[in-house]
Length: 255
Image (cartoon, rainbow, N blue to C red; front, side, top):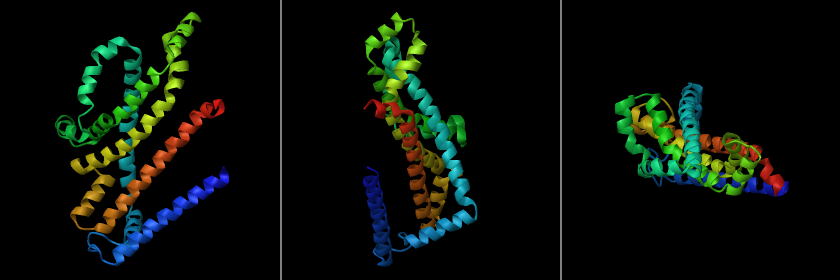
């Protein structure tokens, strides 16, 4: 299995190098004007310059902090609401209709009212991120808690296990695989919305860096910012996958 994984990773690396080579050849052939489509070597040079002057690290930190706080807020609320909707009839009666009304709304549509109420600051950005990132977690938690065998609650009650202990020791571990699936989707949404709010509100971060590069026709800086965004998404997703494997080791053991 280890050898097969090594081959798969080597194949993925070759594919990435082939994409970079194709990009280099297409840019060198001037299929599109270099003003809009620079060579990857120029993008990497711009990336190095952004790192040297400190712009890169500060932009990454600003974007990641907004993404993290918005994602954590969305995760906590999503798990709590999903559990309530799955296990409590009154929550499905009174809360579910309002959530069904809000769920189809694009997160970008609430940016203007969020700016009106919260201003052009981090509070607005985190609120918008949380609003857009909550739905995958909520749906995952609702499905996970809803799949818990009802007879387990009866057995737990028979043995004197209270509802909070049942939720923490039985229902939550059973729902974790679905919750983690929602968390991974939610994390990608949080990164997207962090960039969007930075562009809309002029907040410092990768989104604003990319926007200013586009407006001033600094295409190497623009593509450098896009490469960094991809790297941030890749690293955060793999960190979450590693946490999922560690927390859900019992699934592998049970199989």
